[in-house]
Length: 343
Image (cartoon, rainbow, N blue to C red; front, side, top):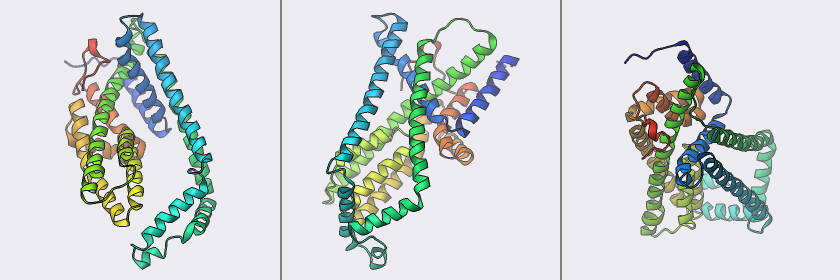
């Protein structure tokens, strides 16, 4: 059936496209996704307790629980970081000494032309880090400001998403607000499908990393410390597209370096190969959720990354899924099950 392209409908599409462009260019993707996540969680968890208390109170109860969880998590993280930094294990001297010991052990197993470039002892390492910080002090300051800015965006997005979820009603709206609401619902449905798919991908990533850390290496006589913790870190960070893989790879390679450079190199190669293969696996899993072929999603990712960089790469699956739904080609949920999407 040919859609009726009325002025409100066309205006809603233009505004949606403009909003997406501004979000990517202005660095507001974290705020958008955090708001969508809270909105999704409120609507998913509300039916569980809605039978006992009224709908609005149920949403407020769920939102209060989510707020308590997030604030408690941030508080524990901040106090834990402060306490660790003041402890002996977290002191700068102990950190430099541990890094120097790892480098010293690795030096004897490296070629002489490579070992000459490594710092000799904790004092030389401290001097090298001081020189680097002096040269890149401006970048380090901007990085700290960016981290604080990201936390503010995260919290603001969650607050906005929670407020919209509480005040979400189904009263009739004028044509233009109704058209905007439809664009927002389609974006929410696309986001929710991608998030559930990303959880599955993160689980697969953790299993593959666990096979390497807990099976392959021990079978080869190599036992790395904190192997189980690294598997857990891989799953948690894997919930973040692209960036999560980088974080988990750095952790695994760094710990592997404490054993030997050859194991660190082997770990790096294994992780790179696995994650390259996961690009196609990711496209397959996510493509199943939005009725898209793997090559479609890969093209969308390449194009968005070329135009917007890392934000475009992260947003590509969600925006492409929204486009498929808008074109009537995606797996659009039924109206009665709009917020309860099954995997």
